[in-house]
Length: 125
Image 1 (tube, rainbow, N blue to C red):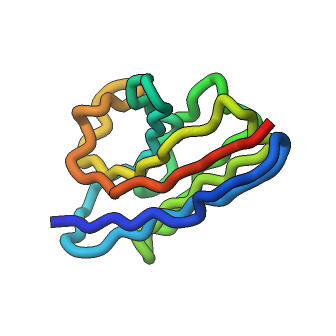
Image 2 (image 1 turned 120 degrees about the vertical axis):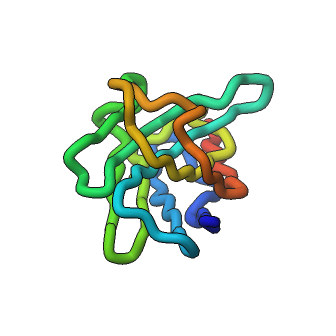
């Protein structure tokens, strides 16, 4: 079992920045990847970014490229999402997730087996 805890969410004005952190604990894996999803009210959950254990694979959603950066620390089993130039449309609950096999170009939600409780990000206009 893997326990994920997100932190770093909050309220920020348009153009501001936030840094989300995900701390994982419990079972360890020789191969895994971590991702950040978000879900806005009334919308489906969507993958924002993902990174492999060795950081040799990185996915970033087109709409946040150039503004969001994902990073990870394998030794600490953590991942971060640096979010700059935030927009009101970035408002959502952000979830951290861990998966075992990155099998497609873009990781699928079903590839992730462990999820955090989520952290709210609100961007005011």
